[in-house]
Length: 380
Image (tube, rainbow, N blue to C red; front, side, top):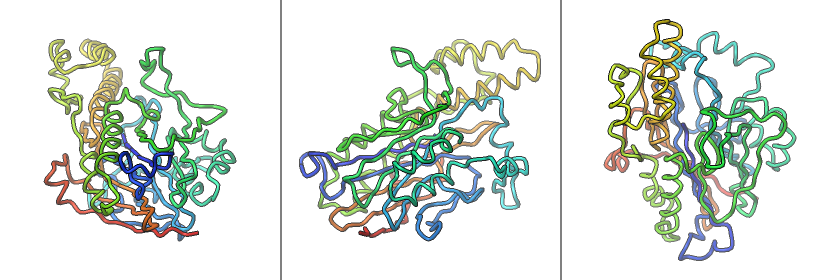
């Protein structure tokens, strides 16, 4: 349940000090969510001598990078296909002597299959090419074969170029906007590709661009837009901009649920009254009712998985800063990133901090917890 918001001021009003900052034409905020024990670097790496990023240490991949030579930036979020019949995440890994997650042989073998196309490898290749759109089109067949994703990419050295959004999944919805399925459809022939509107704010998580049915997307998009327009001014330093924006990444329990941490471990409490009180969806209520009367152990396990996935969605769609824990997963916001383009200084500021050890981030902790920063100079 990663989430990304970005604000651009490269349209016709980019120099209108009343509505936006001429100094900061691009600001991006992101939380990366993953398994709590999945090891991730807490410092910047340089892949192939040009891709500045933070690496996932299980496979050495990344979800976000900036090419320090050509200015290309790309960030990826997952779009999950139906995994209710797959092994739970925590069963795909063992723990080493330091209690860190290590991929099982089954997981490693699957990843190393010759035909396997890895999203993060395509992301690195994309960042190396000067013309992003040309490369997306050239590799469209490969992108269609990978697991589900959303990518936003663009050139941070030249904000007059378009920012690009593309994905290989689509969510079917009815005329009222209600999802027809919990899971997306795979695109077979063509990616969805579009240029983002300039001088605007956008947000993605794990469904599609600016999905206002996801409370976290709506909340982060609106908050980013308001703060960038009203509080990010040319006299602020990049550090001050980060201080102004960072609390947006820590929003919890947007719907103000009575309890936003309900998991399958609480199944013994799931009376009809309890489910009404805690805003269970119709689909979730139906699954719980089946679970109550189920006697087959295999079917009961399957229902537990499906119930837990619904509860995971209920919790994580409701929060920008995520932490959901059950017997099947311990999923949380592991790190936070903020990227700022400074047109006056001709620099990109890439801020990062590790938040894996914190279940929540109050304002005091938000102010105390330090960011590391990589400064990238514009190159002609």
